[in-house]
Image (cartoon, rainbow, N blue to C red; front, side, top):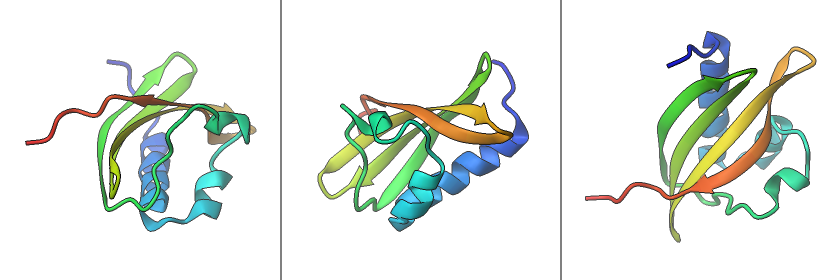
Length: 102
């Protein structure tokens, strides 16, 4: 598995904490391609818990996959991050089926 830059993992985990905290301003500050990035995606709201499933490099991008627990159910969200002007930014989002619980 390709190594991801260590600074990306710290940034991604901080981003997921912003989602948990409901800090929409901080979450959106980590993104580019707004509002298109959110089209067709079920975004987590009122998150009660999360599990980071994977953090990896894919070519020139990095990918983070997290399952968020919400009052309406579990949401799997994959984000593709690009280096933009020296900063990692989420440039694409897509849902994935979260693993079964129990």
